[in-house]
Image (cartoon, rainbow, N blue to C red):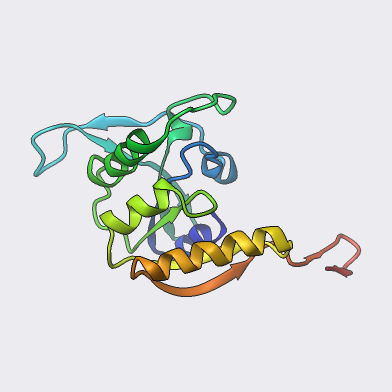
Length: 173
């Protein structure tokens, strides 16, 4: 979410696909709560899902998440083929138009959703996001190893929450 906002603030159009089907958090993080809609678009013989849009500086976020289709407290109990189909629909049935970037927020680890993305987008680049805790770093290492095994290039690692500056101006690590 932070990376998408930073990119949009530079005047870019950034597609954000919240592919963390069970643990969707992007709607809350970006403050977007409207349900998704579908409409006919030029060049398509069927209605397409229209991402929710949010202006950020000179740019735009175009966001799709299961969080726009179910209440935040809903426990989605999908697995295997249902997850794969949801991810495929988010990639093919959404009218993404031509964003400058398409960022995909994946669930932690190496499960069905991550594997599906590697099949649907075989030239994707991977940025692994983690926090400083050893358990989170081990999960991130496995995610990077999986990306390499399916021939996706790991471009970098982003460590969130490694420090913050308090209201007192002091840096806390």
